[in-house]
Image (cartoon, rainbow, N blue to C red; front, side, top):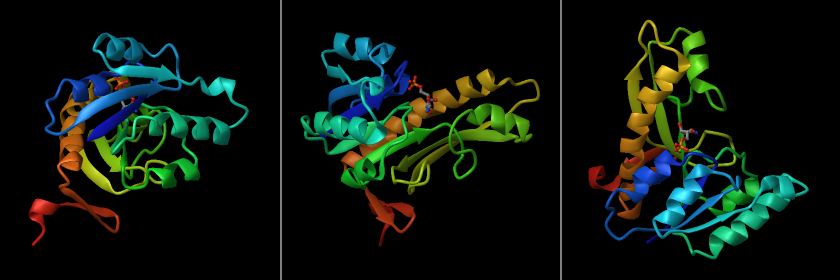
Length: 200
Ligand code: GRF
């Protein structure tokens, strides 16, 4: 099965997927909206096809997304993974990859969609934070949840401390979610995702 990963920066979650042996899966391309994304160089060094489409070169979001879809589809993906891809996607893009596109988000959804999740969790006095892997729908950070990981928020934490703690969990959960998807284990029932080996 072909996996295409979209990144915007460092790409540590992408690296976690590439470094995990997932049966029947191959990361066929790592793509970015940011030509300077550090993760692109890492992927290229590891023999993976890479390309960047700079969103600033496009007149609007729809043009960018259409070009991105065309590029992605050259790799015939079974799964598209948004791993720190910091662009909001058009409904057209989301529909095109419906039920075969997943995102990792650094909060316990449905709390704290969008940006600056760790600072916002701190500001709200939350005692826990975490990350969520979910299917992508046209509503931002709102699709069916595949997996969540929880970390404590400690008394003297900064947002960076929480981010570091959460990132470790992201690196565990995301490859596992990809493996579950690739093995055909995930079944979407309304807003819930059931592992098929748990279904009667
Ligand atoms: C991760 O924390 C991800 O959840 C968030 O941005 C970060 C990306 O990190 N959306 P990386 O590029 O995977 O290292």
